[in-house]
Length: 196
Image: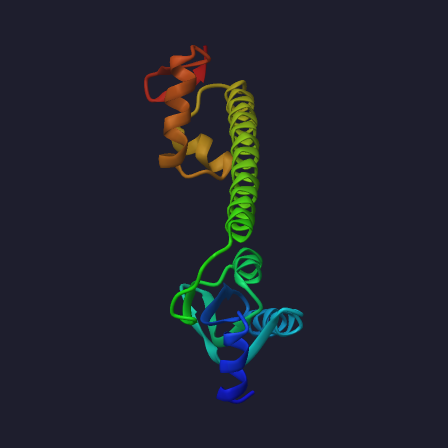
């Protein structure tokens, strides 16, 4: 598509933007394949025209690989642009043309509704994950408590001995031992811990 065609489409109400889509993961091949699939899916969008783009090779960052694509894209209208933002979550977007535009109330309402729906979905997933995490923490603490009580049923043991049986470092185990002591489940007898 040449600049004349692009200008004609912008004059008809389309929006030209530069976007950056980033991915991070492992292994390197997975990042490359996934980015390729994401870009193909974007190119297949009916109301989107990818004018040009550059895909950067993955670079290692803390045992993960990061790659990104810089794209010059035409969007049919503001609603398509916002849907693409929600669906593809680009890390950066720059509206190139038009330099200014009027936004009909229906498009602004659609944008705000989509944004709120996405925020509510994220909020729900966060609350759900938080509740699951709290349940997991309680269950883990109960398992740890039962395991320590079972270990101590054979007689007093030091934190190092308990640690050796459980496979948990002494420094990570000590806060739980202190908590179970405060709860009155175990007590210290000299340098050893025993059931109360």
